[in-house]
Length: 120
Picture 1 (cartoon, rainbow, N blue to C red):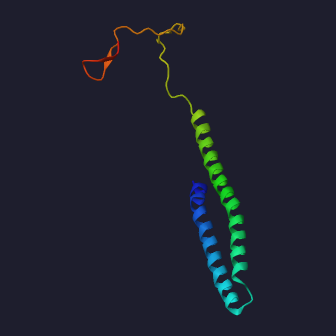
Picture 2 (cartoon, rainbow, N blue to C red):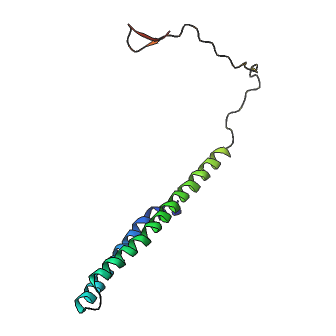
Picture 3 (tube, helix red, strand yellow):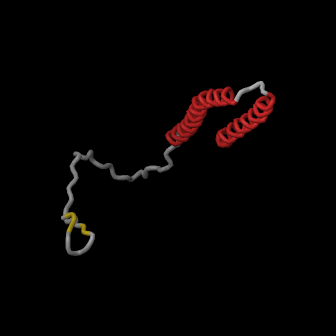
């Protein structure tokens, strides 16, 4: 459960870190552009490089989140399959014969309204 809570906060934390990083970048870049040591074109190119870096990073984060959810679901399935049967059979229970795989319906009717039968 602790892992699930951590994984729920992880995307928000990463977005916060990225936002703080971009804010810092714009503050430093704004100062450097005013001083003339950085051109606007260089800043735009750098930002595009950052976006090309972050896209695969977000894909990896999404994959890790999906993997964590899958592991948790698998653990729940294994726990369900390992559960002991709680129904006890009575001593005088009747043993049923093996079915032949045939099902026969007699006197089965169905209709949405009483005029047009759907199943007869």
